[in-house]
Image 1 (cartoon, rainbow, N blue to C red):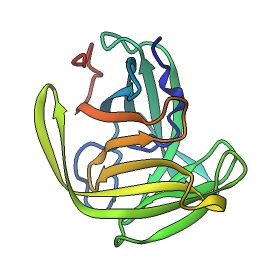
Image 2: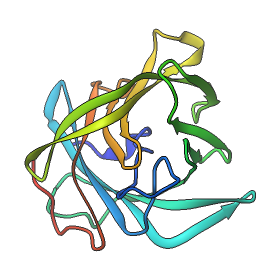
Image 3: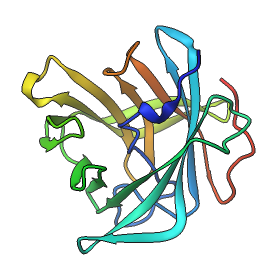
Image 4: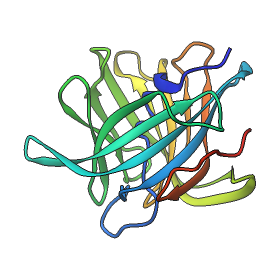
Length: 213
């Protein structure tokens, strides 16, 4: 049975951007999109596809801060992305990315900082998440439009249950600064780990379909 990708909390994030934009850790250029393939490592048949689209509708002002609107479109079929859409709000600075959550407050989602840097925020479960930058300067290779592509200088950040650190790990995300998310691994969902990997990206009109995996 195929999985609906709405459960991927950390894809939040993750993220988003397309082309390098001076001054932002994760640029969110209107109209840019990223396509991902998600599969259950215990049963690869549990697969799904999703696209992060940076909305062309500008920004939303909340508490004096401007957030970009990101649309998450998920599907079990790589030939169509017409349903299953949700919205996330993010803003980026030169070194940090913030998310405005459903619980009505902002938290620091990612940052470009030295290995070993950590921070804590309240999560949607009511507890606290501790995020740790576990590796910097990574080279990560994935298949983009069915051809190998290597992203250099990536950062891996992992999230933990702060009350049970480091035993309970929620997720790990690999991000290319100035570009977006390359890979995410969810350790908390049923049948974990759930692996999500970039397979295509672009700007302008959404693709009619993306390469099946």
